[in-house]
Image (tube, rainbow, N blue to C red; front, side):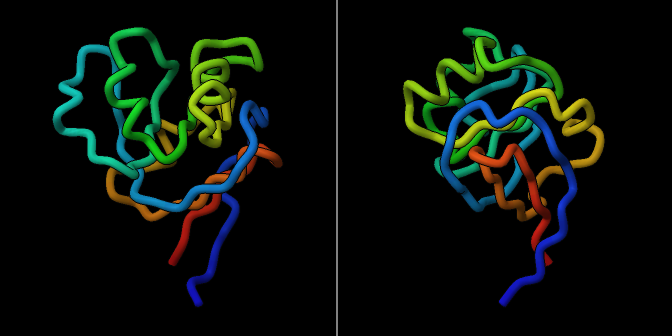
Length: 111
């Protein structure tokens, strides 16, 4: 069983749990490079990211609150979301295996 270590804590914005590969994704990035089941990690989402958000297993952001764009859309899509982690885009690297707990607002890295 993989070990998990708490790497980030933020605001629980949409409940649920998801495990997958992290993908750093920013405004203007090509959504065709974002795979189904990836976990979207960004500063904050915007409408140009919706195609990637639809494929995401979960969303993690550096900033935002419970009424921010990623929080509202993730609740509408029924996927976990943790916002306002302050440093997700610094601590999380592409392809890192992570676990997102959208009810507790916690992100774990899996070994």
